[in-house]
Image: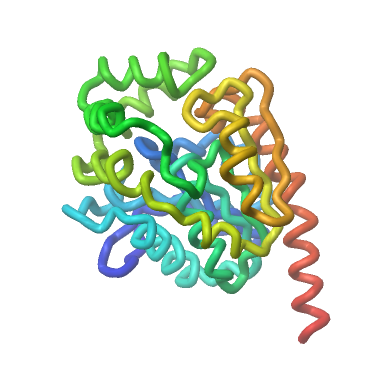
Length: 270
Protein backbone atom coordinates (compact mmCIF):
# COMPACT_ATOMS: atom_id res chain seq x y z
CA UNK A 1 0.00 0.00 0.00
CA UNK A 2 1.01 3.65 -0.34
CA UNK A 3 0.47 6.50 2.07
CA UNK A 4 0.85 10.25 1.59
CA UNK A 5 3.07 12.02 4.09
CA UNK A 6 3.44 15.77 3.60
CA UNK A 7 2.85 15.26 -0.17
CA UNK A 8 5.50 12.49 -0.31
CA UNK A 9 4.02 9.10 -1.17
CA UNK A 10 5.49 6.35 0.99
CA UNK A 11 5.33 2.64 0.24
CA UNK A 12 4.15 0.67 3.28
CA UNK A 13 3.98 -3.05 3.98
CA UNK A 14 1.13 -3.44 6.47
CA UNK A 15 -0.12 -6.84 7.67
CA UNK A 16 -3.41 -5.10 8.61
CA UNK A 17 -4.35 -7.42 11.43
CA UNK A 18 -6.11 -6.45 14.64
CA UNK A 19 -3.07 -7.44 16.71
CA UNK A 20 -0.84 -4.98 18.64
CA UNK A 21 1.25 -2.90 16.26
CA UNK A 22 4.96 -2.71 15.52
CA UNK A 23 6.28 -0.02 13.15
CA UNK A 24 9.63 -0.57 11.40
CA UNK A 25 12.10 1.98 9.96
CA UNK A 26 15.04 0.70 7.89
CA UNK A 27 18.72 1.55 7.55
CA UNK A 28 20.46 3.86 5.04
CA UNK A 29 20.46 1.78 1.88
CA UNK A 30 17.61 -0.53 2.80
CA UNK A 31 13.83 -0.67 2.46
CA UNK A 32 10.86 -2.24 4.18
CA UNK A 33 11.95 -5.63 2.89
CA UNK A 34 15.14 -5.45 4.98
CA UNK A 35 12.78 -6.52 7.78
CA UNK A 36 10.97 -9.32 5.94
CA UNK A 37 12.37 -12.24 7.97
CA UNK A 38 11.67 -10.41 11.22
CA UNK A 39 8.14 -9.57 10.06
CA UNK A 40 7.47 -13.19 9.10
CA UNK A 41 8.49 -14.28 12.59
CA UNK A 42 6.28 -11.70 14.32
CA UNK A 43 3.03 -12.05 12.38
CA UNK A 44 0.22 -12.78 13.06
CA UNK A 45 0.93 -12.16 16.77
CA UNK A 46 1.56 -8.50 15.89
CA UNK A 47 0.35 -6.10 13.25
CA UNK A 48 3.55 -5.21 11.42
CA UNK A 49 3.96 -1.94 9.52
CA UNK A 50 7.21 -1.48 7.59
CA UNK A 51 7.81 1.67 5.57
CA UNK A 52 10.13 2.56 2.72
CA UNK A 53 11.46 5.90 3.91
CA UNK A 54 11.54 8.72 1.38
CA UNK A 55 14.18 8.21 -1.27
CA UNK A 56 14.29 4.43 -0.80
CA UNK A 57 12.46 1.37 -2.04
CA UNK A 58 9.16 2.14 -3.74
CA UNK A 59 8.58 5.47 -1.99
CA UNK A 60 8.81 8.85 -3.70
CA UNK A 61 12.30 10.18 -4.29
CA UNK A 62 12.26 13.97 -3.94
CA UNK A 63 15.34 16.03 -4.68
CA UNK A 64 15.55 17.26 -1.08
CA UNK A 65 13.93 16.87 2.34
CA UNK A 66 16.21 14.25 3.88
CA UNK A 67 16.76 15.86 7.28
CA UNK A 68 16.02 13.88 10.42
CA UNK A 69 13.07 16.18 11.05
CA UNK A 70 11.58 15.43 7.64
CA UNK A 71 12.05 11.67 8.08
CA UNK A 72 10.51 11.78 11.56
CA UNK A 73 7.62 13.88 10.24
CA UNK A 74 7.02 11.26 7.55
CA UNK A 75 6.88 8.46 10.09
CA UNK A 76 4.68 10.42 12.48
CA UNK A 77 2.19 11.36 9.76
CA UNK A 78 2.03 7.78 8.56
CA UNK A 79 1.44 6.39 12.05
CA UNK A 80 -1.27 8.94 12.80
CA UNK A 81 -3.05 8.09 9.54
CA UNK A 82 -3.16 4.37 10.38
CA UNK A 83 -4.86 4.75 13.80
CA UNK A 84 -2.79 1.93 15.28
CA UNK A 85 -3.56 2.38 18.96
CA UNK A 86 -0.62 1.53 21.24
CA UNK A 87 2.46 0.65 19.19
CA UNK A 88 6.19 -0.03 19.42
CA UNK A 89 8.52 1.85 17.08
CA UNK A 90 11.48 -0.20 15.79
CA UNK A 91 14.33 1.60 14.01
CA UNK A 92 17.51 0.19 12.47
CA UNK A 93 20.68 2.29 12.05
CA UNK A 94 19.53 5.50 10.30
CA UNK A 95 15.97 4.46 11.15
CA UNK A 96 17.08 4.18 14.77
CA UNK A 97 18.14 7.83 14.84
CA UNK A 98 14.85 8.82 13.22
CA UNK A 99 13.03 6.76 15.87
CA UNK A 100 14.90 8.60 18.64
CA UNK A 101 13.77 11.96 17.32
CA UNK A 102 10.18 10.81 16.92
CA UNK A 103 10.21 9.23 20.37
CA UNK A 104 11.35 12.52 21.90
CA UNK A 105 8.11 14.12 20.71
CA UNK A 106 6.01 11.80 22.91
CA UNK A 107 3.56 10.94 20.11
CA UNK A 108 0.18 9.53 21.10
CA UNK A 109 0.16 5.73 21.28
CA UNK A 110 3.91 5.20 21.50
CA UNK A 111 4.48 2.49 24.12
CA UNK A 112 8.19 1.82 23.58
CA UNK A 113 11.21 2.01 21.31
CA UNK A 114 13.41 -0.74 19.93
CA UNK A 115 16.65 0.67 18.51
CA UNK A 116 18.51 -1.90 16.41
CA UNK A 117 22.18 -1.04 15.75
CA UNK A 118 21.05 2.59 15.96
CA UNK A 119 23.03 5.57 14.86
CA UNK A 120 23.67 7.47 18.10
CA UNK A 121 22.08 10.87 18.73
CA UNK A 122 25.43 12.64 18.49
CA UNK A 123 27.13 13.31 15.12
CA UNK A 124 28.66 10.23 13.53
CA UNK A 125 32.35 10.34 14.41
CA UNK A 126 33.74 9.73 10.94
CA UNK A 127 36.12 12.05 9.05
CA UNK A 128 34.61 14.13 6.25
CA UNK A 129 36.73 12.40 3.60
CA UNK A 130 35.35 9.02 4.65
CA UNK A 131 31.79 10.34 4.69
CA UNK A 132 32.28 11.78 1.23
CA UNK A 133 33.39 8.33 0.12
CA UNK A 134 30.24 6.83 1.61
CA UNK A 135 28.17 8.84 -0.88
CA UNK A 136 29.41 6.51 -3.63
CA UNK A 137 29.24 3.29 -1.62
CA UNK A 138 25.99 2.27 -3.31
CA UNK A 139 26.84 3.31 -6.87
CA UNK A 140 27.43 -0.16 -8.31
CA UNK A 141 26.91 -3.83 -7.54
CA UNK A 142 30.63 -4.18 -6.86
CA UNK A 143 30.78 -1.28 -4.41
CA UNK A 144 27.66 -2.49 -2.60
CA UNK A 145 28.97 -6.02 -2.22
CA UNK A 146 32.28 -4.66 -0.93
CA UNK A 147 30.46 -2.46 1.60
CA UNK A 148 28.35 -5.35 2.84
CA UNK A 149 31.21 -7.83 3.10
CA UNK A 150 33.82 -5.46 4.53
CA UNK A 151 31.72 -3.19 6.75
CA UNK A 152 28.05 -4.00 7.26
CA UNK A 153 27.83 -7.76 7.80
CA UNK A 154 29.92 -9.92 10.09
CA UNK A 155 28.50 -13.11 8.56
CA UNK A 156 27.76 -14.33 5.02
CA UNK A 157 24.20 -13.47 4.01
CA UNK A 158 21.76 -15.68 2.16
CA UNK A 159 22.01 -15.10 -1.63
CA UNK A 160 18.46 -13.78 -1.83
CA UNK A 161 19.08 -11.31 0.99
CA UNK A 162 22.32 -10.13 -0.57
CA UNK A 163 20.57 -9.58 -3.91
CA UNK A 164 17.81 -7.60 -2.17
CA UNK A 165 20.45 -5.37 -0.58
CA UNK A 166 22.05 -4.76 -3.95
CA UNK A 167 18.76 -3.85 -5.59
CA UNK A 168 17.58 -1.66 -2.70
CA UNK A 169 20.89 0.20 -2.56
CA UNK A 170 20.99 0.78 -6.32
CA UNK A 171 17.39 1.99 -6.25
CA UNK A 172 18.03 4.71 -3.67
CA UNK A 173 17.71 8.32 -4.77
CA UNK A 174 21.06 10.10 -5.23
CA UNK A 175 19.90 12.81 -2.83
CA UNK A 176 19.06 10.21 -0.16
CA UNK A 177 22.40 8.48 -0.63
CA UNK A 178 24.26 11.76 -0.09
CA UNK A 179 22.10 13.29 2.63
CA UNK A 180 22.76 10.72 5.33
CA UNK A 181 26.60 10.65 5.40
CA UNK A 182 27.01 14.37 4.69
CA UNK A 183 24.18 15.90 6.71
CA UNK A 184 21.64 13.84 8.67
CA UNK A 185 24.23 11.62 10.35
CA UNK A 186 25.90 14.81 11.58
CA UNK A 187 22.79 16.24 13.21
CA UNK A 188 23.05 16.39 16.99
CA UNK A 189 19.79 15.30 18.64
CA UNK A 190 21.30 14.41 22.00
CA UNK A 191 19.08 16.93 23.82
CA UNK A 192 16.00 15.43 22.16
CA UNK A 193 17.10 11.88 22.98
CA UNK A 194 17.26 12.84 26.63
CA UNK A 195 13.54 13.69 26.40
CA UNK A 196 12.53 10.11 25.54
CA UNK A 197 10.31 8.77 28.31
CA UNK A 198 9.11 5.40 27.03
CA UNK A 199 10.93 2.13 27.77
CA UNK A 200 13.70 1.63 25.24
CA UNK A 201 15.51 -1.53 24.15
CA UNK A 202 18.82 -1.08 22.36
CA UNK A 203 20.01 -4.13 20.38
CA UNK A 204 23.63 -4.09 19.26
CA UNK A 205 25.65 -6.59 17.26
CA UNK A 206 28.76 -7.81 19.04
CA UNK A 207 30.80 -7.38 15.84
CA UNK A 208 29.13 -4.22 14.55
CA UNK A 209 31.76 -2.02 12.87
CA UNK A 210 29.38 0.86 12.14
CA UNK A 211 27.85 1.53 15.56
CA UNK A 212 29.76 -0.74 17.97
CA UNK A 213 28.36 -1.59 21.42
CA UNK A 214 30.99 0.57 23.14
CA UNK A 215 29.95 3.63 21.13
CA UNK A 216 26.28 3.06 21.90
CA UNK A 217 27.05 2.61 25.59
CA UNK A 218 28.81 5.98 25.68
CA UNK A 219 26.78 8.05 23.23
CA UNK A 220 23.26 6.62 23.58
CA UNK A 221 22.73 4.69 26.80
CA UNK A 222 23.88 7.63 28.91
CA UNK A 223 21.17 9.84 27.42
CA UNK A 224 18.00 7.74 27.42
CA UNK A 225 16.45 7.02 30.80
CA UNK A 226 15.12 3.49 31.30
CA UNK A 227 17.07 2.16 28.29
CA UNK A 228 18.47 -1.35 28.38
CA UNK A 229 20.92 -2.96 25.97
CA UNK A 230 21.15 -6.46 24.57
CA UNK A 231 24.19 -7.55 22.56
CA UNK A 232 23.67 -10.13 19.83
CA UNK A 233 26.66 -12.51 19.84
CA UNK A 234 28.52 -12.73 16.55
CA UNK A 235 26.25 -10.31 14.70
CA UNK A 236 27.33 -7.30 12.69
CA UNK A 237 25.37 -4.20 11.69
CA UNK A 238 22.77 -6.08 9.63
CA UNK A 239 21.12 -8.08 12.40
CA UNK A 240 17.69 -8.00 10.68
CA UNK A 241 19.31 -10.25 8.07
CA UNK A 242 22.13 -11.85 10.06
CA UNK A 243 20.08 -12.89 13.10
CA UNK A 244 16.39 -12.28 12.31
CA UNK A 245 15.08 -15.04 14.58
CA UNK A 246 16.97 -13.81 17.63
CA UNK A 247 16.01 -10.23 16.85
CA UNK A 248 12.33 -11.10 16.47
CA UNK A 249 12.34 -12.92 19.80
CA UNK A 250 13.87 -9.93 21.58
CA UNK A 251 11.28 -7.59 20.04
CA UNK A 252 8.45 -9.97 20.94
CA UNK A 253 9.53 -10.30 24.57
CA UNK A 254 9.94 -6.52 24.90
CA UNK A 255 6.72 -5.52 23.15
CA UNK A 256 4.12 -7.83 24.62
CA UNK A 257 4.10 -6.60 28.25
CA UNK A 258 4.46 -2.94 27.23
CA UNK A 259 1.49 -2.96 24.88
CA UNK A 260 -0.57 -4.99 27.35
CA UNK A 261 0.19 -2.47 30.10
CA UNK A 262 -0.63 0.46 27.83
CA UNK A 263 -3.94 -1.07 26.77
CA UNK A 264 -4.82 -1.77 30.41
CA UNK A 265 -4.02 1.83 31.36
CA UNK A 266 -6.34 3.08 28.62
CA UNK A 267 -9.14 0.85 29.89
CA UNK A 268 -8.70 2.09 33.46
CA UNK A 269 -8.58 5.75 32.44
CA UNK A 270 -11.71 5.32 30.33
